Amino acid sequence: MKLQERFSLTQLLTAILLIFYLVGTIGVGLYPLEFAKLTPFNLLLTLVLCFWPHQPKDTFFYIQLAAIFLASFFLEYVGVNTGLIFGYYNYGNALGPKLGNTPLMIGINWVIVVYSSLQLVQTISTKLKVKLNALTGAGLAALAMVTLDLLIEPLAPKLDFWEFNNLQVPFQNYTAWFFFGFIFCYWLIKAGVLKNNPMGWRVYLVQFVFFLVLNLWL
Image (cartoon, rainbow, N blue to C red):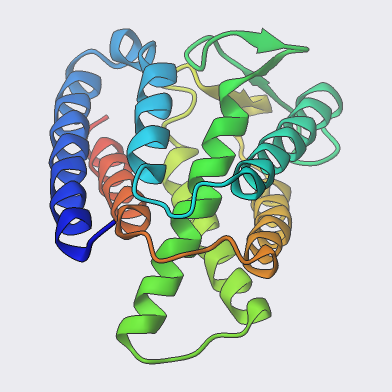
């Protein structure tokens, strides 16, 4: 893909992303539970917009994403049914169909958050002309993931995403997010599939602002 074509595609995808999340912010702000039911569609659209410009989209790349999807879904499956990983919590209905009390969309969410957090860290380090090794890059990306989760957790019960016992989010949840986020991020870095994709960091920032505004609104 030529640079000019890629730039134009990025502009188009960014415009779609911004419009969609702007409408979503207003809709969720006014009608929280009704608009929250559109979350599966939101995640799928975000997934497409995020990965569309990624090159190369070869078999190896898809295998890595599928592995993260399956691994993260397994973590959530064990977590929600035992309380051993993230603490004791239950999923609501806003994330769509479930398998073993676990929404299938939660794996998609992990894929988006891992990838976009990595792209954010890579973009910042490139702008600052700082070369990061795999451990540092994965650590910073995992920290970005936890930062986003800190914004999501207060909204989750209000939007019927999930709910911890007594509405208290345990510190265990954040340490687990950091630990497994680090593993997934390190995994992608070492696999060599992390390429320059300008939509990655845009997706992270748009989601960050989206949840920040909703925390102030709801």
